[in-house]
Image 1 (tube, rainbow, N blue to C red):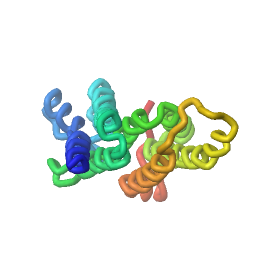
Image 2 (cartoon, rainbow, N blue to C red; image 1 turned 90 degrees about the horizontal axis):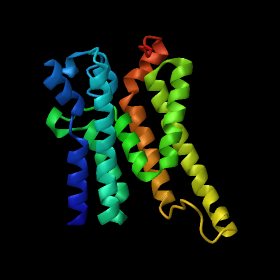
Image 3 (cartoon, one colour; image 1 turned 135 degrees about the vertical axis):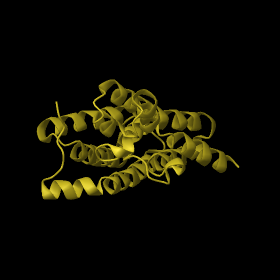
Amino acid sequence: MDIIIVVLFSYFSGSIPFGLILTKIFTNKDVRKIGSGNIGATNVLRTGNKFLAFTTLIFDVLKGYAPVIITYQYFNDLVSLSCLSVFLGHIFPVWLKFKGGKGVATYLGILFALSIQLSFLFMFTWLVISLIFRYSSLSSIFAALTVFVVSSLREIASPIITLMSEKTLNSDENSSDIAFILFIFLILIIFTHRKNILNLKNKTETKIKI
């Protein structure tokens, strides 16, 4: 019963299409008919409304963060399942015939719930890559890869750190579960950016406008 509650609550939370809702309410436009057709903050920005894009980003981050934190409080052993359900809810929302966003902002919200350090690592890496190459898709993929690699290295190093200290700051008993779920997220983020990867290969990918 707990599994069903966590899956449904997490999935439906993740499936709320804030980008579509906000643009429809405030601009009377369908964001799916603009730019890439994506419902995420990057495509909302293409409406020309930076405030709506920022608001979409915040809400997409929160819908990733809140269900995982709640699951952590009441169903601690099902956190990984909650993470995956939230993410799948965003990229495959039942309300939009399973055609959702690319999941980057929701992924960041999940990261905030799992690890503050990893979430800041993701943002820092995304920012650096975006400033160098000016491609949001490349920045997202590379940042997700970096987070996965660092989490995996931390998992390998944790037994050594434990031997050196009885109790470590921010030690994580579920580090192996986190590394595994981050690997799944990396694969899913690559999947949702498959068209962008093809555009990058063909040099037709749209750059970030500053």
